[in-house]
Image (cartoon, rainbow, N blue to C red):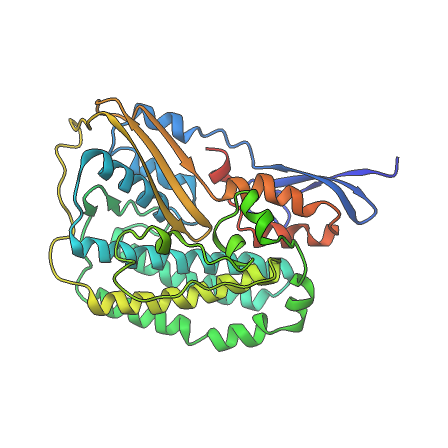
Length: 365
């Protein structure tokens, strides 16, 4: 009778979206944790079998509301493999810049959630404001702030409008100029160190066994990034580094997020400097009559949460026969989170969960 069942979330500040956790606790110590990804029952992968290849692009965006752009990229690359479509060189640069802007925006959203959960309200407001600046760029480029549907088979929907490069530079300088403020108020704050250091710790061997990717794996000291090991778009055209930390705890994971944002900004500047002229779209056949040859393809990219993959099967018709996504939130939210919460303090449940970057729609697809 000493055990107590607690429902942590989804309304809790330490949760995001529909995600919640059922805890069995004794005092303030967690004995067992059972993750509940929301049971959204949206069935994206099954719905894609009833829509044409192009009609699926507005659908795949919903798999990750915070960062839909890498889902577009993985699906587009898989379709391009099946159909044998070449992407123009300029489009590859545009895609990379677009995806890195999405990474910055996603990391700022994650920083907002984490800082807000720890009580750093001012830092959280800064992060959300700077994310809005990135969304302003997306709105001008694509017409949408959240779902963009910008990447299509063969390239992107449209080129950068006149003066857009300068707006990217101005926006990123505005965000980068506040890095010392973020460091002073949050990253170098003793409270952040005490609350996050040693929390949700996982070693590199265990992280690999459980399927960790992204900042969860890089926080254990492993330099694994799909953009490096299997380059796509224009990521092999410029020099950049893979930020890592070594302790494998929440503190290290958030520091990797901070370092990745800075690295993404530098990468965007380099890509803008060497981006060639040319076309940004290799037009495919009529999308309403487009039948892709039989076959199967797997494409992967590095989202802000880790390796994101798309497995697509075609039976030669105008719709996919089967689509399955490999999402980083699945191992992070259902496997690793439950392991890390055993014997944890109740106060560290939200801390651990947000540091793992779990997004419920990536799990229940």
